[in-house]
Length: 123
Image (cartoon, rainbow, N blue to C red; front, side, top):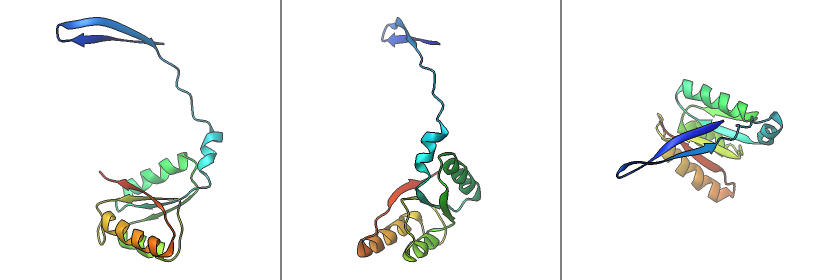
């Protein structure tokens, strides 16, 4: 398959470019199983987003996930000594925002030497 496009300069079309497109490789189930060991915490207040995150993580092979609805639940859960490889945290949530929750969790993790990786979710 080929893709063609025009290179446009200040004076209009300068040249036509062509390149061959590589066929997209399908991701195999074998490569996805490499995420099966990961333990993921999702903190998101919108139910639709929770469902989407669950679907996406499942497709990546993640089988160990916990989904919570606000920052305070996340702080309490982490303080109960639950350990996660990654925490996906929404920024805007009721009760305790993602930023406030992340700060509290980071302080607690520093004190107990139990670091987690964070990723921020935002609309």
